[in-house]
Length: 232
Ligand SMILES: O=C(CO)[C@@H](O)[C@H](O)COP(=O)(O)O
Image (cartoon, protein in one colour):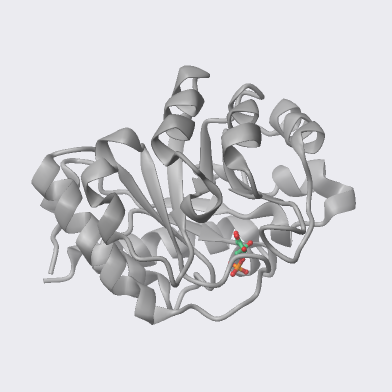
């Protein structure tokens, strides 16, 4: 079991609402409903890497223009070696790409960092983490998908938790500050499981936008994750 001390003073869970669950024709209004979020999670889907289609650079740029909160862009697209670094040029705080879609993940991460954004590596539920553990210093965050990427509203997959435990152990061993993010099925009843396994950053779509009061939902999720770290 981890304790708060493992977070070296950073003991507040980051809650990143996913605008995949927002109303696409009222995006600015819905961005303003999550002003206590840490980052806005923006799912870019190309109907090729995943079966769903959302938005591309033009929309991400506009979201960036109007959002009061920095953007955490999650690329679910093919050929990220070619298309990924351009998203960093839009001013996003972080750009996360899937290792399954990259030919040279380290080169993509370096290109993203060179353009001023934090670089994140995402893993589908069936992708093992072991080959990437030694590469952690190349990434500012690792996203462990807790559902198959593509759609909101799916059920959390607890079988992905061993990957988080390995990542948390490696972060500690290397002494790096790589954030560990989870995405998919995160809600009040699952967030503590992921927090206990080592996550410090939580993406939530339906749990935030499906709530009557999104700000209260964010506060509840943050409290549930932070409490899980404090448990003896
Ligand atoms: O990347 C994805 C889905 O592929 C997510 O960011 C979803 O938007 C999460 O939605 P919920 O599972 O929280 O409803």
